[in-house]
Image (cartoon, rainbow, N blue to C red; front, side):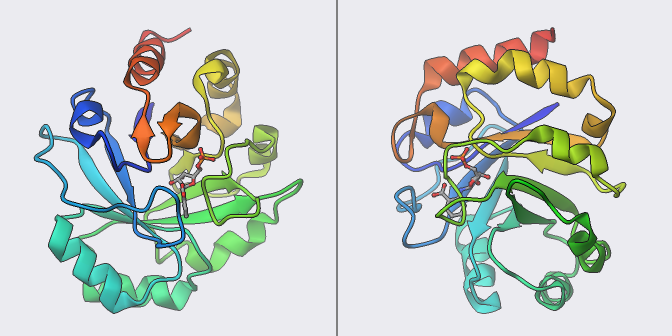
Length: 209
Ligand SMILES: O=C(O)c1ccccc1N[C@@H]1O[C@H](COP(=O)(O)O)[C@@H](O)[C@H]1O
């Protein structure tokens, strides 16, 4: 299972040294962990993911160029036609993660129009904010997941969730789970990650149950 550490801002180099598969940078101004500054050189293999909320195509393309982003996470109400336009503009070179907010229930039919225009889905918990709400949804809802597309499991995953994650990973609905996405539950303040907790979490994940 791959790992994405999101909401990087204050201690990027230290966290990158753990060599997660993905590091996420939030490019949404109202976020308390909006990315400022420059991204240090990362160990090879660590992919930089830009997280956007209903940004314009121009803004996203600009950030890709400025920060050398490898992938984008569209975390707002971006339409299938916007995803298609983005893929055409980037000639399929920048994979698209389309995020969806999951409440007490989730209508998987809404994924249909996105099947051909994104590379991954991401399931986050529905809350007041578009993302970074710090609480999880009922992962059992994913037992109705109808797609073959790999997805990121997100939303309030914290250091204490390892055992439930191992349980989840043994269920059929985890078959298409490509990566775990962690964010606010590993922070000492917004954008500053707790390296010791992340180190332990990553190690436990690698060891397996
Ligand atoms: O973290 C944010 O501030 C944020 C703002 C706007 C869009 C997405 C954001 N973060 C994403 O939210 C999920 C879940 O975060 P958490 O674990 O509940 O804190 C994660 O995918 C982040 O990429």
